[in-house]
Image (cartoon, rainbow, N blue to C red; front, side, top):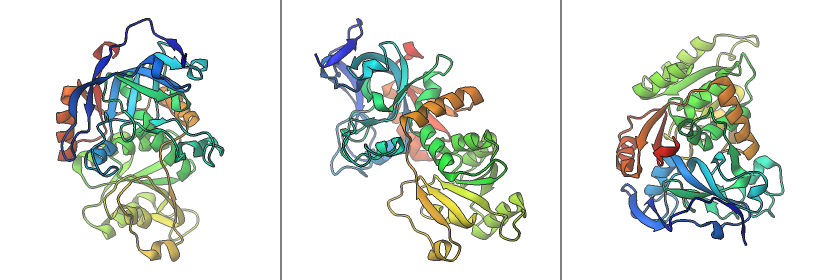
Length: 372
């Protein structure tokens, strides 16, 4: 048999799922075949979904950014839930009944330069079987299949609602803060600080002794930036005013003039000027970590050439980094700001809220209320 362990509880042949059937409109709820224990590969984990978190990427999928035609797959790559069946290899680390979360990567090939490299490279495998909600079935469904190589157990004190956003927003913020590598007492800038990733990145940095300047352009996002613990700066009055406010917050430090800007900056906003904003609030020779995914990034060459601003991309994390994040969130009592919806039928409201631009923090959907 291709699977090692399955639940004694029956799994329905069909399930409800919210699938991408047309670009530019919300997901369509349909009855679709449920994954079965017999269909699992060695590293697969079959999960009864408790909560599925919504990500900006879900809107990108609905708008046709990744495909020429609608995928027909359930959305969401931010799941939490309970294991009901496992593949042979997965059963060595997990058991039926475990509460888990997982990054959405499915089936890395195991034999490319990324898979054979350091663990942090493995998520970059270009020969995997797919990514949940984009090129493989996601968590806007009653059941979904996850990969044990990107899954971690969660303790009982961490709720499914709080845990689901950690699988993308959380772990991406965690790695970005690590890569920014600002020392305690230093200053980190975050452009797009009042969203799902931003408010988590603020707390991750602050709880490690790093000062944070948050740059935003919406009132609701500025409020969340302050609530999360950063010094909030409104970009709308213009670049010169914004930079002066950043300088005033940081003040001159030990190395003299020019040391009153951020040591490093993380860019989370996909607005066209966001990368330039990140560069101009960063001191000379500093690092800008680009996390946002606009179609193209633009910046003045002077920032890179004359001020020696360095750039690095960052995306998601490894399994061990996700496990480290879970421990950190529990031990440091990191708050996950959530707007909670109930049932797949609420996804039209989720779509409308996203399109309105009025949300801050993370939007999550409870799929199975009996687990929450």
